[in-house]
Amino acid sequence: MNVLIVGGTGMIGSNLADWLSAQGAAVTLGARQPPRQGTGMARYPMLLGDYTRGGFKEDELGRFDAVVFGAGNDIRHIGIEDDAAAFWRDTQTEGVPAFVARARQAGVQRLVQIGSYYHQVMPLLVDSNAYVGARAGADQKARALAAPGFNVCTLNPPSIVGVPPGIATQRYEKLAAYARGQLDIPYYAPLGGTNYMSVRSLCEAVWGALQRAESAKAYLVGDENLSFRDFFQLFFDAVGNRHQLEARDEDHPLQPVAFIVPGRNSVLAYEPDAGEVELLAYRRNDVRRAVEEVLRVY
Image (cartoon, one colour):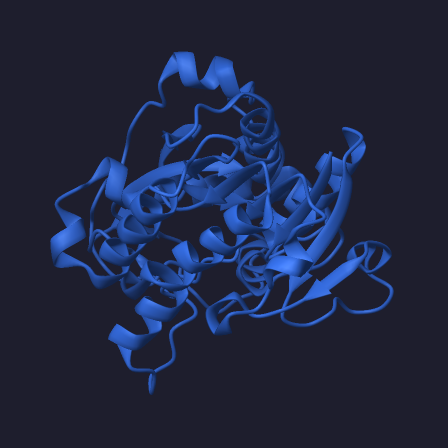
């Protein structure tokens, strides 16, 4: 299988490249910029383009059997000076389905979109949160393009635990330092929680979707429901810090309320459909191992 991963130099895309390659797929990374030399990503062929500006033309996409789209922007990527409506239009509601339409026209046989879980778990957020509404629109419009010979589905995952292979990322670098007592932040965690999933489990789900997904279907994937306190505690336990965290009704610099999409103190918990887990063939109960793997990077 000849696969293009759009968003291939990001955390999910880079892990997915290694996973699909190990399954025998021929992998090309699609991104706006090439990866840094010396990283594992640099060994893959590259296709440069910006999907929000019409990049990845039909003549470029036509040589691929399948495409995994994992480049959808989220609330971490919008700048203070950005026009929010235009940003979500370009990166989600219009940019994503326009890219999917180009893939269909090019003759790509299968496309897996990696979306986000909010609109499937909390549909009321679609009308009240611009980001969630944009994700929902991109999901629905992309799947509406399914056609005979063009299988398109969406995987909507929760918070993903992982790092690009061998590369440190700021979020987990800070969590690791916090757990080791190296940051001047009191020991506590905010109230609330969510579902977490390892990047390895998500890679397995993508591989399953490329082979067996029902066309035009959205799959809510996920693994473990954890409070923010319990998630932070995994890092403390993994580094050997015996302190037991308490949960407080206050903001935390490593889990700011601005990045908690459903709002302060919210709990976003669910159980993925057992039949869909079996169909996509991804492992469960993998978050603790993923945290330990992340910490090995540091």
